[in-house]
Image 1 (spheres, rainbow, N blue to C red):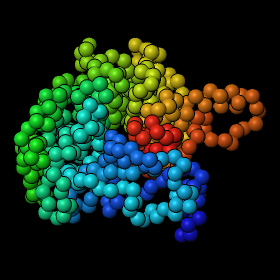
Image 2 (image 1 turned 180 degrees about the vertical axis):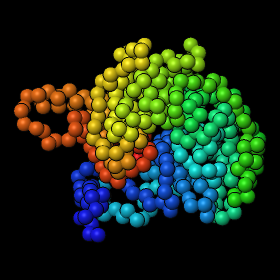
Image 3 (image 1 turned 90 degrees about the vertical axis):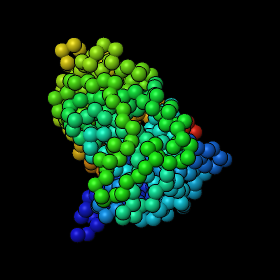
Image 4 (image 1 turned 120 degrees about the horizontal axis):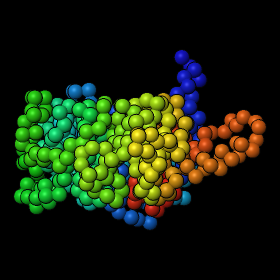
Length: 421
């Protein structure tokens, strides 16, 4: 088959030719194994021409070696510093000199989701192909060699409560040391880890640079269950039931420790308030026309939420306009993808900008303030528009995956559309 007969490769070739025009800077880092999750961490250092940023990656192996959580440091070049010639000559088969591995944690199971604790950036949580949530102190965990027969790293904490696998729905509160999870058991579970992360930080094990339990188990010897025994366990603070199918994603209110939301394969968007009990506070019965895969809560407008779905669309809701009967009409519907939307995330700097990634291989950046203007322009002309969907101002291809993200510190020093993973 010729390259031009493959639409994916054709799109990629077109995108690659436009890289010097689209981006102020671009780094490509080729991993040995596929990555199911990536996440920006804190900014570590500022310099004249570039900043150093923490980056979390996962590697899903074929079983010959264990799965890993990789902690890397990424040098992010500042605007108008990198030469266009350098950007256009990147090699997608090579490892970027801007991305340097800092530490490797051998993870018990694949890493499906990574989230960091805003109050303590050394603490991250991971979801795997099981019912547990793992908590890691990335500074005190030992650096491991990824070889056959290597030992599993021991989590600093293991959060229990799910009765079935909880693979993707995971969030940590920006307002307090709280963890939220959802899974196939149709439950949303809340944990408070305040006392545990304080004791872990001050413990002799942490000071000696070993894992919380001070032990590791052999990979490939059926020892993952033993690790769960060695790692300190934390029971739920609350279990919330309102979904009728798998919970796919959860998110906290940006400034409240009591309010959060969830979406699932039942097409529901549910808002919860722990102060009023374990029943839904508000809900939308049919937020989309198919499974809802992802949700994010605006940091700038506390009543506005984003959702993404298997119906190929992203939708924006205002919780003040949700009715008691479970009905809610979205403020806007964004239809720029041709496959299920797997991730949506608000930009931390510009309140009207968000990103969406999907199975069609595209990472799209949107500006909802352009939607109204675009609709007015469309009404004023009788000709059918061939322009991109309203609000879409930046598509890039070969971004197929389950995560997209803006680094908070990074976007404070550069344009929000130029620093995404």
